[in-house]
Picture 1 (spheres, one colour):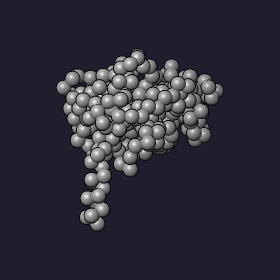
Picture 2 (cartoon, one colour):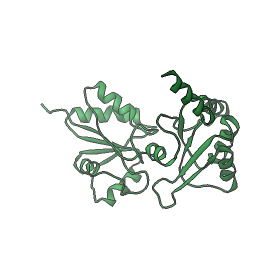
Picture 3 (cartoon, one colour):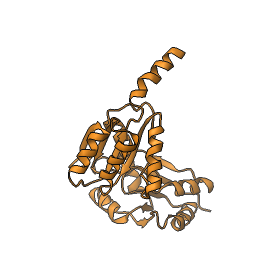
Picture 4 (spheres, helix red, strand yellow):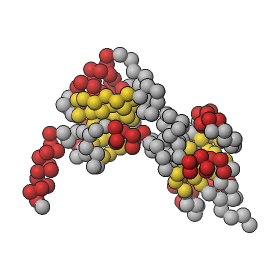
Length: 241
């Protein structure tokens, strides 16, 4: 009888291909199968490190069907590595469903940590991040989008979310209008890539910047909705000690 195989959830670079751990490379070289969000994208990474591995797709449109197949293979003794296009699986990327079903089947996922756009943004923002919330991507529909930004305005902590180049200008305008034009913001564009850019200022200032010319790349937005409330809250906390 075959012993149960392994499921590895492997973090991969968000841009610069050198941002991968030695442990991740060891795993990717050793597994029987790599389940990739986009096999073409992952093949570029594997080719860069001369890794010849069998690939199958596992993305938002087929992960329910594919998850069952992958679990069956692991239970049959195979080792599988799951990767998203960039960053850490499950963080605004496929991975949660596979991890959940693996645990339900008695398989303990092995997490191979590494780079994430969230942790990059936390470090680069130069905003208070002793506690923060991650909101993934804003919704597309107007009513849900407004509620998304209203929730940010109500937060008691710094908020990080992702945005696409097609909506970044609109998003910055909405942040300024709903959360407040004076709210401190950092926008990280193309993190770790050749044209990496970090802009810091108020929501109103960065709304003007985002609207001034078409922007390309992927974005992480960090906003401190607490701003002028923060000093008052910290003073109240000190008095209560």
